[in-house]
Length: 118
Image 1 (cartoon, rainbow, N blue to C red):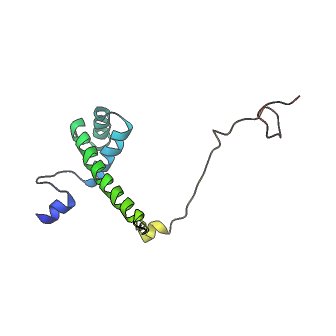
Image 2 (image 1 turned 135 degrees about the horizontal axis):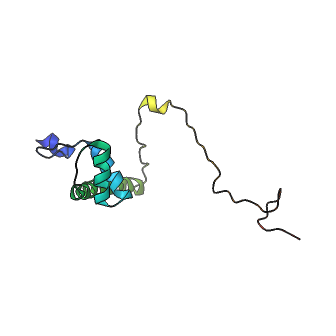
Image 3 (image 1 turned 180 degrees about the horizontal axis):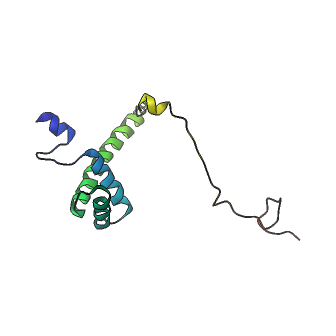
């Protein structure tokens, strides 16, 4: 089936793109065996570490092709078209927050110096 091939669907495939994305995300954050176990606990589906490795290879190859195409377009002087998003998503407000945990404490109150002057 030409459409199946274009979509990357193989005969008797029983996985969703969402499951592949979750499996790949887990696999880049932890070893494949551990990602397999976490995926099983979260989804109830058993996917081997070897399958996760294959998924990461396939998704990575597609990402490399997409990046190469975008870079070729950009190097040719054309702008890269932004990814289209759903109108409902675009209408949502944007909220950004920070908690300041990484801000250094100053030993001398009301001064920009990090060290005490005498």
